[in-house]
Length: 208
Image (cartoon, rainbow, N blue to C red; front, side, top):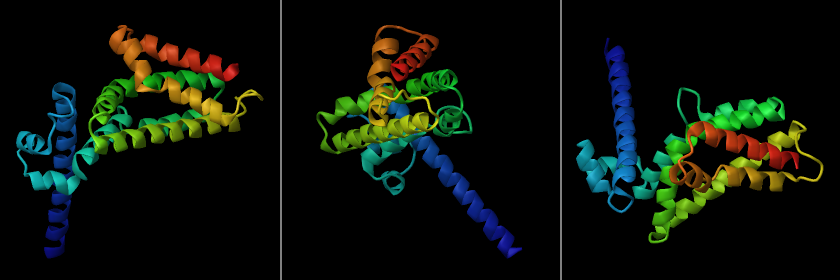
């Protein structure tokens, strides 16, 4: 009986800890979008979520760690299977199916992550710590896109004159928050139009 109770207590504590972490990440996202980077402070977040400042620092490596967690959550997309995992599964299809799938994933993930990345970029000009984070996120996206380009090459979809590095640059550009900003946020394109632009553009570039 004692062991069962201890196991139950441990499970309950883990569930509560995960719930608190999720609440902190979701609230931090809301605050970033509503109030901006400077006003989204650890004390303000703790007060809003009714936890101690120490509790926030226990879960995240300062403000940059909190923002990194917000970005990571956004990149997962919607649903139980992470967008990155679903993207990897697309590599086995023909090029047209592949880029259409990427376009759909972009239209799912970009509304969640691009606004946060744009906030990070703006804050990076005035905050050295967030500038380091911004560079890390940018570099990670480039590595990810180069990996995608390598999978495209392995599937035989790259023309002879197009290197994996150049294809990675193309994917990195089309997946940038700036493209989402220009087309959706500033020009008013809907997500279907944005997805089609990504798919058509990437397809044309990879066939060039």
